[in-house]
Amino acid sequence: MRLFLFLFFIISISLVAQKSATNEPVTHHFIDLRKTSSSFKVVYIGTADTSTVKNYLLNSVPNLKNTNSNLQLNKIVESLTGTHLLFTQLYNGVQVYRGSVKVNMDKQGNITSLFDNTFSFRDFNPENNFPNPVLTATHFNNIRSANNCYFFTAENKCVAARRINYLTIVQKDMEVIVDPNGNVLYSADQNVYFKPATTDSLVSAMVFLPDPLTTAGVSYGGSYVDAVDGDLPTLNNERVSVNMRVNYSDDTFRLQNAYVMIADFSAPTVAPVFSVSTPAFNYTRSQAGFENVNAYYHINVQQQHLRSLGFTNIVNYPIWVDTRGDLADNSYFAPGHSPPRLTFGIGGVDDAEDADVIIHEYGHAMSHSAAPSTNTGVERTTLDEANGDYFAASYSRDLDPFNWQNVYSWDGHNPYWPGRVVVSTKHYPEDLVHNLYTDADIWSSTVMQMCTEIGRAEADAILMESIYGYAANMTMEDAASLYMLADAALFAGKNANSICTNFFNRGLFANCQIDPNDGKTIHLFNSKGFYDGTGAIIRFKEEVAYVKFTMYTILGQLVSVVEKQNINSYFLKAEILPKGIYVLKVETAAETACFELIND
Image (tube, rainbow, N blue to C red; front, top):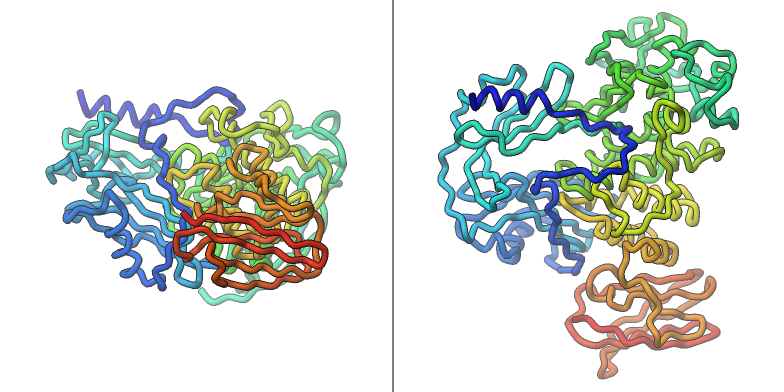
């Protein structure tokens, strides 16, 4: 009876649809509701050597100060400005389920932020009686991996458990945790839903840039409707001729290169198109080849955009893409494959006809590449959806600004589903309902406002750099701090004014406000951030040609002198300064102001 109930539980799990329009709160398992313990206090350890960092953590993280505790390096990723290490918690040599520490370091050997997701074993002495592999393995047809690990139940008990990862017949990448008796403790779908030597060659193709409604400047309706994927002249006329590089071998052009491979790996079976001898991929939207070409083109353009910003290690593999891989009106990113995959649905408007859907799903791959094994926890998964919406809106607005605020302008905002927007006025945290799709616009609208104010290139770069620092169970407030730190690392805090103001207005920064003892044209924002890691900001009424920053101890001893030209703000942190009270003197041609700062 237990096994029957177990299988029934697995079969009855519902898909997590990206296109969810419900505003209702979602019930989550307690393991997904945990919030990380985050720290933005700068700690100098001198090196990113993994052994040194590991020893530091074992001696400083409270839950690891136990002779039976240890850490195992899981991932190490290099970004433009630092190194990002993810450690897995071990107890008695066994992995702790979702026990981890994420450490973000700059190039000078400083820990700039730390996210602690470890568990305490002070009240537990678990035994290693793990479930029988034969008992648990025989009930799954396509097991991808099975590992022993500790799992924490809602009753605050620690039990020996087995983690099984398997693929269902409908391509759901399932993770299941079972106890020694075969009972299901936790289950989750790991897919992230939307709701030989060759040479390359340049070919022509027809695509939407970014979709037919945007370029036509119309809303859904009249002759601008899906029409069961029919070849309406109004829609086909919105196709644009582009050039793109594809694989060429044996006299055949194929839609594959170093970053994308159009494939067929999921029902319905529709083989990818290719062209013999002729360097052209010109299809109408009723033909499957159109979706192949449209997805291939837009993913390549986004990849080149990332590389132009300096990010050369994001999704640096040929991701598999099935543009007609799901009969439903849904798409998803599946990280559990090697390489990971993107699947696009054909219900309603074919998803791969809308660049917003394509870039959103590719955004999940970007996040997985920058911060692997971290997309767990309610607000963390919401951030992944929000960043996908942001990158989609940023991309399509750059092509054509018509209705840019409507994400999924062609696939959504129609009778099939209402789509989403990136101009909401929701406020954190009171507008949270713990639904990753409904809550996403709190963050996406905020960072989209930043894009409007500081420009796409810098806004995209700041967000991408900040994602390297992401950790399991982090909050939107944590993401805001990482965004601010990324601007400081990439652009010396040049955009701090806009960032600080927008995050404060949304409730994502609690301390971004003018200190009362400011000057007339020189303002100090967030003095508390000087020591807590979020960063204090010196803001000028307008851009100044020259400014001198001099730091003294409270006793008048010189600490540092920094000179800057043509700036309107300056970002500063205590970093490795000893605890104490400091005086910052700010001098411009027109004014001098002094501020008291505390490093507690």
